[in-house]
Image 1: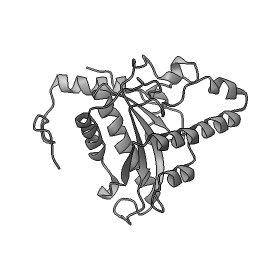
Image 2: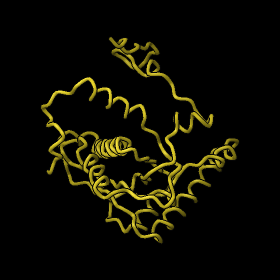
Image 3: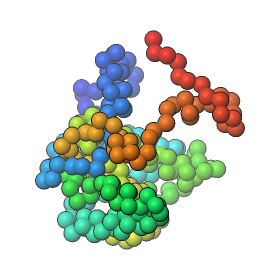
Image 4: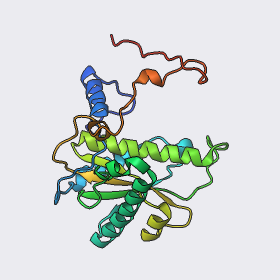
Length: 233
């Protein structure tokens, strides 16, 4: 694997500035829907972002991810139609909130500079670490790759939005994927006019994030006791 000579190896220690930058990227990551039309992503930057995804951990080193760049305009249009179909179906399923949902911008498939499909590859038979949960561990591994890609994009000052509104069987046909491969995410990537100050669903009042204390328990998950994280030094 080719690495950037300016990037320290895995045995390196990180400075306070390195650590602060990392946590800034985590906090600044957003699920972007608004992209700059007609923009592009430098090929060198795109390679760095995809390489970051490929450096993700995977159970049993199975690396179950595949990334499909959608370069054909007609193909992108067909994918956008699949997303629109599911957007309308989602609105119908939401009942009373359907109209509110339709006011939200939930994807940037047509406008983003790069459209990348994250695909769960056909199972390669890996047993190590996934004997009891084979598909779950493959999905978790793919999700790690997408998260790496997302954070790398933000570090490059590029927006990324994960779109999951599509029929996976229909999208697999459109992309001519091999049997047993499944598209899991449409990743809209590219320059954006501005990053949201807060997650868009919070800004629009759709839903509010809950604090960490609601999610940390000790020794059992059957009670509501929570333990807050230690105060920073």
